[in-house]
Length: 496
Image (cartoon, rainbow, N blue to C red; front, side, top):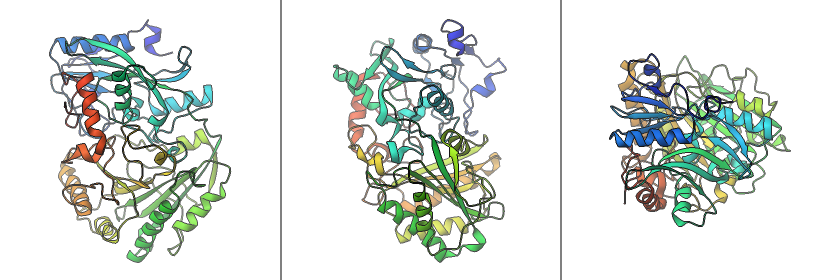
């Protein structure tokens, strides 16, 4: 039972001000670069309390930001000076709602809690992310994807409704439930905007409703192959990257027999402390031999792999000292592949790819991974598989327009000493600019923009890179449901 349920709906430690010992922790994000200085943090235990907290902040003229799991890559949640941070972490229930026959995930629930409760009680799941402590509140409304997405699509492809607290033109806070089959055009627009339009834009989602989510797998097959950098020269590196992209291009169509496969290629910086490139993959389905076929295709013409000897950067997953395929109960595999890691300072960038890496990009990747002025064992380019069922949905059906990609890239660097900020930020920014130029990965038939759940304030034309042709409709939703721009951050949807 949640704290809210135990106390009749209101979380007992609701308001935390600067003089409280919890304040220094609750104003921080998971990324230790972000520390806010709000007037207070309000911990909310149910929807009614969220409505009251929003109304009080609006009446006081305070800027509102929202915290679920606290994992926002930029300062959109924690970066609040003098305002009110509304923390939904006490709202962490997962249950089957008898009235709607939907599985409900409250906005403060972590992904791990959602997976465990949905699996153990109902045998279902959502195709969400692998980092266990990420909050569902931000993950889902940004689209949501993970190791089951090639099989089942994005998280929002299964979302039926949201309960959301909005503020109207008179400044009144109210809770609405917007569903896919609402008869009201404005409510359908609100639901559509939350199918990938990003968090902190229209209001505060307090409950997500999933109707007929997919059955959870019983078993999963996992492999972790690695190559010591000392065994990888440029021809081998180029062959590995080409094989990987080529396989995903050939096996990324809707209905592919490899749809149960999800892979992550961790292209690390070459350093003495982190001496391996790592390939991690999971397969769920009735043909586990496909996992070995995938590995053989990716590893054709390069040195034989070995076992992984150390975690990779922040997403340190699947540490196994032998390269054999392991069969695990699916829930255990999900726990094994958790990439949450410790609190650190970090910077991230993203890109979608429709085609394999062009040769000039392979050259650039090699250069930045092998010739860093100050090698960092926690800096890497992670290349996730994509496509299959993700691409079965029309780009306009949800707010996520990237529905033809085969790979999703995440540039990452992590450190702990603030004195290393400049070196890390310069490396990742220079890397990204060398790959795509000053405009970023503009949709051009090879690239397809960026992922809003990996926000990057360096992007200039972020509106197009995140949302492409869907941005105008998202602005319409903003004008309808947040006409006063109460919910805003550095890359929030702009009023029309």
